[in-house]
Image (tube, rainbow, N blue to C red):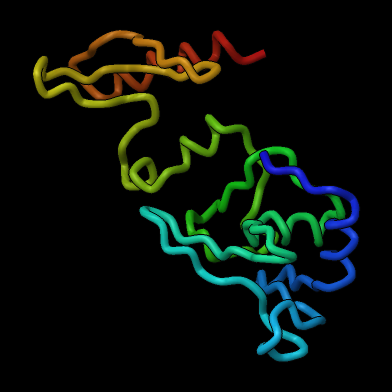
Length: 163
């Protein structure tokens, strides 16, 4: 996670305002020479498969949802911020939550479309494989006849490692 120093936090706090209902961040000063006095800051970065609003201030880049979190809670986020609805451009505060990496991975677009977390289909064996990532290391949990069985094995492994 990118952390910022206290001077940058103060500059952002003094220069920007955040509307929690719309998710819009407004800048009270001119961050660039050719822009208006009060502007909606940021630009949309179109990465695959996600789009996020990014913010450049004093030659440093930030994700707008992290700035929104900071301006709303007055605390720099030290975890991943998840967009609950999956829309990376929706920075309303009720759409943002702090999560661990594994929780964020479970909220991916293909999981929302029905694919179960912790499963992949192995075409060579014609079976569903359960796997889990712990501290950056992939662990094989077994091959199963159905996606549901593989997912259940994943959930069992998740329970075993959670405190």
